[in-house]
Length: 286
Image (cartoon, rainbow, N blue to C red; front, side, top):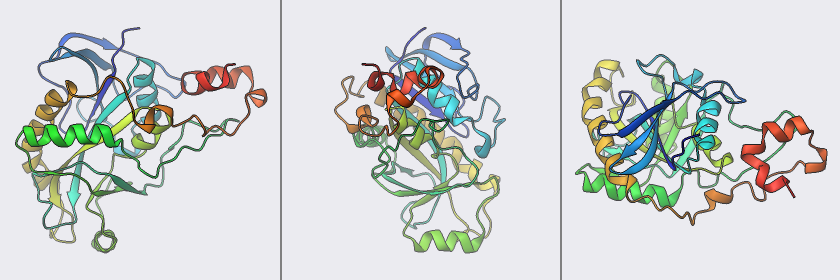
């Protein structure tokens, strides 16, 4: 199967990357179902990469229904080691304005309906999520964002909400009181699953609005007004970043499962070992 080390998961408004060459589309089945769409594999500025639209082309899948396990597993299966997520968000800070970008370093999980682990079915593992985003990849995105001319906030806490409706005003004021910086619907469970898959994950959060702590109402009209500008910046940042992503990883993401697997190999059935081989095979095969 064709390979790529860098993957991009596109968010709202980002369904393709112009400038990719040597394009081929992969339709991959996984033990966790089919991904959101076919994976576009090719080269960007000479660097091999894979692109996957999170919501499907035409934006067909709500955030709660995104098949994140299949998406991350499929990218892992073609050799992806670094994922850049593009995520639209609202802001809780006056200084974090619509049109700005945030490279978050923390996340608070307020989702309710999503499966956020590959494990279960008789196999248990507990990865560390103390620092949920890869610091090395985040630094690459920060530098690329500034080179692109965007206003970039180097860190921030992202509230991951369920959706599909936007927050109530009471919820928005609560999250603001927690000191959170932005809110959106899509970073989780991607970041958790990427860590379980030992893939580096960092996000370009595109701010489109102030949440309803400040806005009278958050509507798609407001969001779409800034989306075109944000998507243009995100595409430019991706083009700048792909050539700067280190090929040899020195971060902890690459060995996240080394001490995380609780179930002993002797307790696993052949069927379980086969199902989880891509994720844990190197640790359980002696």
